[in-house]
Image (cartoon, rainbow over all chains, first blue to last red):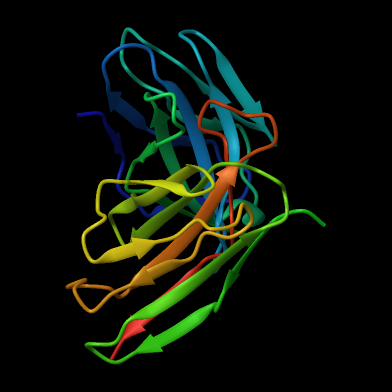
Length: 112
Length: 114
C-alpha cells in the first residue's frame, strides 16, 4: 500500500538557520502531496501542497517540490524562526476520497 | 466563525467503559473524518463519512463506532473492545472547495484510559 517516510526528529536549529525536512513516498499512480504543521496542543493545519510532478508548493516561507523521479517532497525554509517550532507531517492522497496517508511527523525545535 | 468543534478536549476513562467524542462542524460540508494520533506513528484514519447516513471504515476501525445522522455532527465512540484507546483523536473536514486531500482539522480530543 501507499506509505510516507519522514526523517526522524527532533531537528534542532538556531534562529535564521536553513531548514530541510526530508520526505519520500511510495504510491501507485500520481498522488497529491502535502505538508501539514501541528503546533503544541493543537490540531493540524495545511502548510502547502503539490498535485503533480515538478509542482512547487509554498507558504509562509516554506517550500517543497514534487519530485516524481526521486519520489520525494522535501520541506525547506531559508531562515527559520522560533515560532516555526512545531511538528511537521508529510502526507499523500491517492484515492480521490481525501483519505490521507501520513508520515510519522518530524519535530522542529528552533532556539533564539 | 466557521469551523470544527471537538469536545471534550481532555477525557479520562476507566478500562471497560465506552466513551463518545463529539465533532461538530458549521461549514455545511458533506465529508467528515476521524483520525487517531499516537506518538511516533503519525495519524491513522479510523472512519470517514462522505454524506449523511453513510460512513466507511478506515485503516483502524476495530473497537470504534460512528454515526452520521446530521450533516454537522460525526461523533466517535471508543468502545471497550478498543485494546489501546489512549491517544489524541482528530476530526477533520475538507477545506472549502477542496477535493485533493486538503483537510481542516479540529483541535483534537485527548483520551486517557486509567
